[in-house]
Figure 1 (cartoon, each protein chain N blue to C red):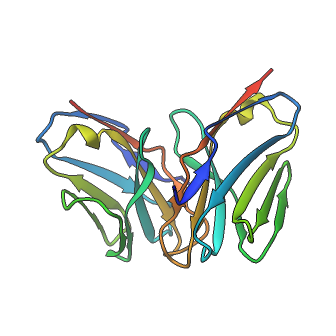
Figure 2: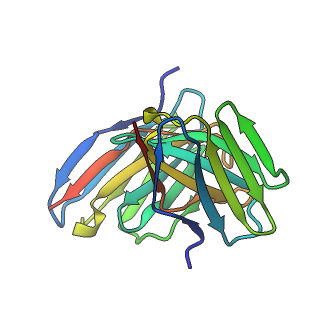
Figure 3: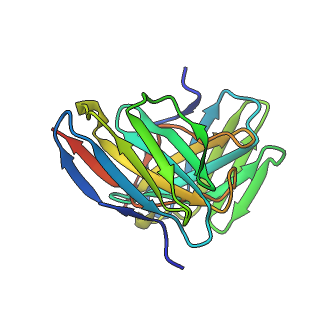
Length: 110
Length: 113
């Protein structure tokens, strides 16, 4: 299987919470990241979490990490149409390069 | 502070040609990484430069090369272009190698005909 896996699509209604999930295989991963890509743009770093943490909150974003299951999730509260984008999960071990998932396309329905 | 800039934004080439893409990192950033993004393979790491030295290299053929200048600007070159090289090439800069905060440029969209 893939090193970092994500579901490809997610559709939510405006105002609801979105939860984007990610699983990874490398247990030596030290940092895990969430990036956002809007059409025609590069990647924007949303947040990251160190592997010895299990939760990080930043305004509307909550990251949960289950290290035992190698599962990472990103929760977006009160999802807005401007949150429509592709969300990438990525991991890193030490100083090695980022390894990305294929991305989850989030569609927000007004 | 200006972000990461990449030039050109769009490029059309034919098979067999070569291409050079440029990336100017955020002022003060000394590490530059390059990624290839395609619908099929997703985001794949090409190489990383820090202080004019290649620090990491991805699994790409030798047709893909890069360099970094003393002002931290970086270029990547692809020779003998193939149709499969059509992709969005993204550059990311950070203060140092392994930094958690990598800032991405808007990318160069390369189309090979």
